[in-house]
Length: 332
Ligand code: ADP
Ligand code: NA
Image 1 (tube, protein in one colour):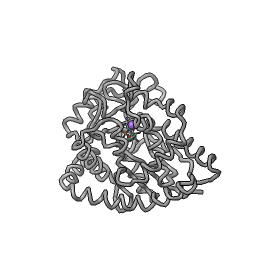
Image 2: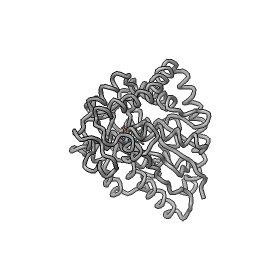
Image 3: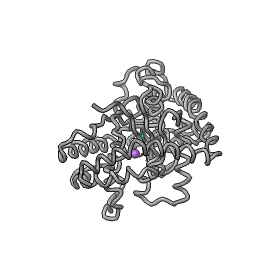
Image 4: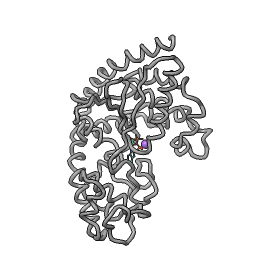
């Protein structure tokens, strides 16, 4: 059996949102604090599956590193690094491109969403993205991957690739990962449309809270968030068919480390006139220190580069031997 090891990554493709924080970063810190070995990565090779301005990409990578650090990732307890600095990711991805089947990748809904109608014009990298993601995880023989709901299908593909590799070569080499998709905020929705995921790529800035938003902006966005006019229900079933209300309750729960049922026990029967200001206060209270820390880290880019360089060395020390063994198994 493989020892428990956590891996996850985030793309440096623009500002971090509350969805990234609650669905990923906050949970990354929890895993680290539980004493499990944790490896976290800025996946810049994934970011370039769509064109990125080179200067912006460099800045976004440092800003993302600052976001990890400000969210409580301690680079002495976790390994924090940049994907392109550890060549095993790209090398193992090639092997996995040769294991994964075209049909498997054609089923990926994220590719369909991101490629849009003109999929013939999408990059080959965008299509092959899930095989690189499998390599990110398998290069460390990671067993657990904390992610948001949107990554579930990609993790199933990671399992399929590991199973097929093990079968094709008659080995028990790659572990079969467990997706860790839990808590109240595995799918934080847009503040403007309860049917859409909160995303850094949504054209409307009002749809998301950015980790770098100041207190006034956070409060305004929550106050203006779309809702119905009913008071909050007393129990969870009362949220059925009320996507926007459910989303705000879930956000409150995740920020306060409560369950949605506990939030409703407190606020059931109250209208949004009371609930939104309480949520805004809570969000400002939890996010302001993170934003301040990010700003502080961003003032010392050399220190960020030092942390990422050190992390890359430690990541490489784990991934290189696994890549060597993979090549050996394959006959390379
Ligand atoms: P994005 O989806 O914002 O472009 P990534 O694809 O790099 O960002 O995702 C980084 C992590 O954040 C993943 O684990 C993803 O599941 C999580 N995540 C992104 N958006 C949300 C959301 N709205 N709710 C919960 N988790 C999210
Ligand atoms: Na995503």
